[in-house]
Image 1 (cartoon, rainbow, N blue to C red):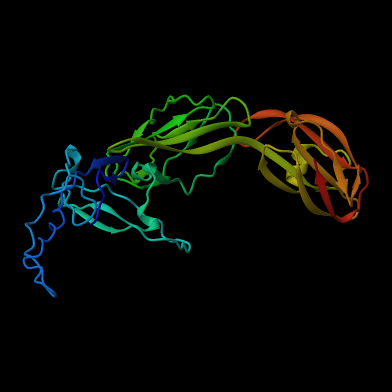
Image 2: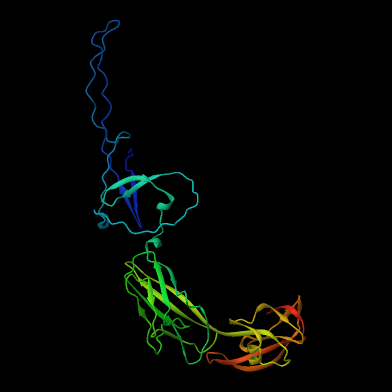
Length: 340
């Protein structure tokens, strides 16, 4: 490796950079000048050359040698490389290949070409939660009253990018504060390898006081260098009902008992299609706290009227007021309704 005087060699290792100043060894100077003529005759003999000159103080070319002072305690042999998970696929990337110094596992230094997938972000060496799921648990739940959402029999699964030393699952309320219900349960501690947890009868979630409220199940995993979290967010809402009925003043109970559909949602807005046969009206009912609605059929606004506001108790005992809308006309056949 040819280097000029005072060359700096930069060695990179993960997040640190070492700059080493190189002091090259001096080179031998050029041979001395030849001596004068011994005999001044035509075609005279050239004199004997003089002795070799001394070393010059500022060499400008030739072989140079360097030594690396690897004083960083983390560089002593044997060196343990950090774990890293590479991407499974890379797009084409063309560019100039360059050699840099690599620290080997035995503590030695080698020079090799660098590739695009040799470059890592510092965050890639930190513990991250790749997935956290409870497959049999819907994130949208019907709100209940004075009871608990039981998790017994459900299984949580998790995966990670690095080795995990410990992990817990806790419950957070809508304010983001950890919550332990009266049944106990949370937080729950996972056992090695911290990838699954089987919920039992002690694990349950208390219903919030108001619909539209969120709660979170939070997985907290502790690694060698950092702590990572991942959330499953649950929202507790009420039902929306729509369908057809020949009663011109049907209440919610009548609508539900008849030909109707139920949607678990905290929004009044939707599009649906029903078939209103002979003498049948179209009904739409939802919690009044969501505000009044606008109906559009065939591109024209209107055609529905608010006929009542009534109290309704769902199957889990939660009670709130509902609006009941009815189409102004009956026997409309197959009709697509847009509610906003």
